[in-house]
Length: 597
Image (cartoon, rainbow, N blue to C red; front, side, top):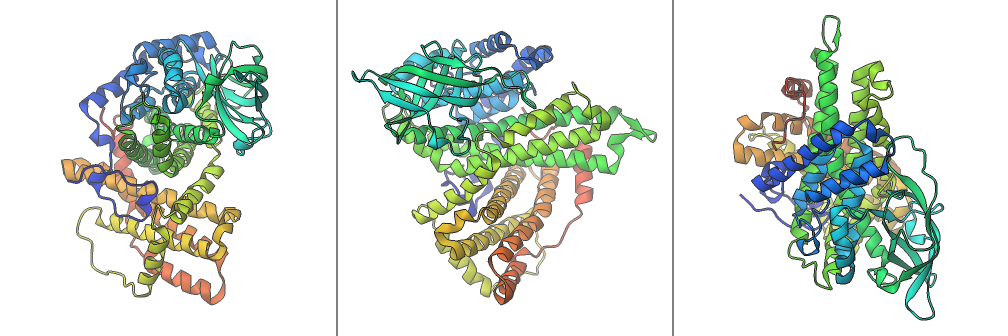
C-alpha cells in the first residue's frame, strides 16, 4: 500500500491519487484516538452542564473554562513544547477541535479563536522573543487572544485597511490609530493581532496589548446567532506599540493575514464536522420518539432520506478535512519553531494548501447549514421554537459562510490560486488541459461493465476532473487574464473543483477502508460514497454546461457540448435503496457512527 504523499496544492485536479496516499479518519493512531476522547470528555464534563448559562454573554465563565482547557493542554495543541505548549501534530489538533465542540458558541468560538487565529500567527510568524513572551500565557488561558483585521469600510478587501502606524522620532515605537470591527473575543481579549499601514502603503501586522493606553472597545454587537460570544469594535487612539511588537516584517503583513485566514479556514472544517455530528444525534433521537400515523417518523422514507443525506454530507466533509490535515501535517513536519526562518517556511507551507483550505471552508459551512436546516424540518414546529438546540444551531451556523472570507470570495480565490499556480509553472495545468482536449477528439466510451467495487465511481471522479479542466481551459482561453472579472463563470468552475475534491476524498477514504478491512466491514462507507458521487456527477455536468453556454454559442457550443456528453455518460444506480441502508445503520444508535474513537 502506498504511503501518504505530499501532493502540491491543487494537484488533485490533474493527478490520479491512490487511496494509500491520503490520510483518513480510519488512520488515527491510538494516541490520536485518546486525545480525541479526552477533548470529547472535556466537552461533556465542562460544557454540557453549563449549556444554558453560556447562552448569555458571560466572559468570566468563558475565561474560567478556557483556563481549565489550558490546564489539560487543550489550548496549546499547535504551540511547540519549548513555548509551553503540547506540540501535537496537525491531525491531533484538528481532532481536538472537532471533538471538543458541543454546539455552545460562547465556548466553541472563543476556543476556536484562542487556538487558531488568536495565537497561531505568533506560533508561525512571531520572533523567538515574541513566542517566549506570549505563547506560554496563551497556552494556559492566562492570556486571551483576538484577531483584529476587519474595518468598518473594509470587509473582504481587508488589505486596504485605513488604520495607520507611524514610527516615532526615536524609532522605539509605532503610533497606531484606527478602528477594527466585528472582532470576536474583543470584550475580554488581552492581546489583539492587528494590522495597519506603515508609511501609507506598507501593510504590517502588530501584537497589541489591551491594557496599553489608547486601546478601547465599543459596545457588544447584538447578533442573529452565536449568542454568548463577544463581538465588538476595537479602537486604537495614539497607541504606542513597541517596535519589537511588529509581527513578521514591515510591509509583509499580508503574509501573516492571508495565512492566518488559511488557518481559520482549515480550522473551521473540523468544527463544522463536529457540529453536524451533534445535530444528527439530536434529530435522530427526536425522529425515533416522534409518533405520527401510528409509527415513529424515522420509519418514513422521506425522513430516512433526510437522515441519510445529513450523514453522507458529514462523511464527505470529514473525509476532506482529514485529507487536508494530513497534507498540512506533512508540509509542516520538520520546521523548527525556534529558528528565525520558521515563519518563512511555515508561510510557504500554508500558502501551498490555501486552495484546499478554501475548499474545506466553503463545503463545511454549507454542509452545516444544510444539516441544521434539515434538522429543523424533521422537528417541524418544535424545531422552530426558541431555546430548542436545533433552532439555535440554525441561527448559529449562518455566520460560517461569512467569516474567514465570505464563501463568494473563497470561490474566486480557488480559481485564482489555481490559475496563478499554472502561470508560475508550479502546476502543469495548461499542458494537461491541452492534452485532455486532444484526447477528447478520439475518446471512445468503454462499454464494458466495471468489475471492482467503487470502480465505476473512481472513473466518474476521473471524468469529472477532465470536465473541470475543459471548462477552466475554455474560460481561460476566452478571457485570459480578465477571467477574474467574470465572477459567475469563476464561481461555477470553483463549485466543480470543490465537488471533485469532495467526491474524490470520499472515494479514496472508502477505497482505503476496503483495502484495510475488507468489503463487508466497509458496507456503509461504500453506500455513502456511491450515493454522493452518483448524485454529484450529473451536477458537475450541468455546471460545466452552464460554463460553456456562457462562453460560446452556435456551432462552437454544440461541439463543446458533444465533447462534454462523451465524458458525462453514466448509468444511474438505485440511490434510494442505498440511502435507506445508510439511514438504517444510523437510526438504531441515534448518532453518526462512521468514525471510531
